[in-house]
Length: 395
Image (cartoon, rainbow, N blue to C red; front, side, top):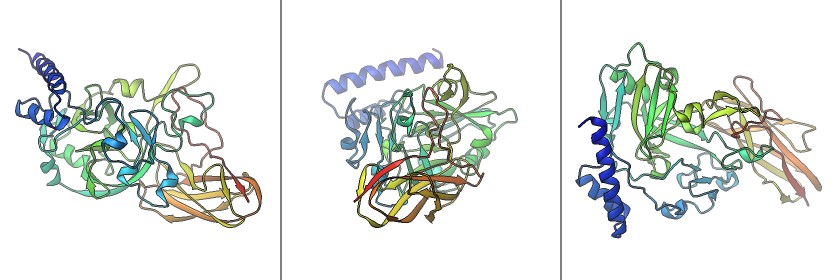
């Protein structure tokens, strides 16, 4: 029997066993244990960590202030951070393309294969014994702020809620690839997610070897939560979140440009003529006012504006704010930062006079790119980074 046929047989047998055990009332962790004892652990479709349609906030004891868009996607209201620089794990946005898999950290393995001299199979303990680094980085869904496009673009109608900033701990991907020995004909790597077979994303070799690209197993000083890709995920700072494959189980080095659906179809910029222009990569410079919130009522007198700014092209160097509808601008103070991959927190004081007005913020990064006032429409609603209006009433 061929390898493909063996894998197919394992998947069918495992799926049937899962269905029967679930029908008998066994919980997901118990089913996972039984499958592991039967030698059906990682090779096949994993047991879901949550029942279909379940509220992930309840299943994983997350912050109830997360905004539910559907059963797979939950947003972070930035005002709920209360000025915190790091986004707590339980309040970090969730974007899934499929069910959350229940992967046993003890049996988890990372397969490194393809155009390498020495294929590797690494356990979680193996990774922890290699170079360990900790870095602060923002992570933003490619479709963050999609709801601001007019006409409506396809996809989850995110507000400014699919972004967060965390401290990540793991091993630089380049160290793993160096150990495997990348061959001279290598062009890209393909990361394989453990949630379903089609969760594959190509990444140019140059970015895979960049010092900031990591295989991570900890988030904000804790084991990487299951709902955020644990036990191990890929982290590609600055790029749309789809590049940072969750539940990472495989890295294949290939000698050509990957033609998978998540590179050539789903995560591409499509214009009004239905032309695919380019894949989603670096996220553009952006700032969002966290407080006051849109529609808020404020007392006259000194008020404080706070918010966050980030760029996939490097360090945010300046944030400006306007308190009179965009007529006059003044520089805000960057009150906290943590390197080129992190967002910055900014603040500004303002003498609020009675009446209605609109607040704005705009960021500039080290490449001297500045937030625009308008963004070209695209069919899938990616890369929205126009300056946002925050209307308020001063009493």
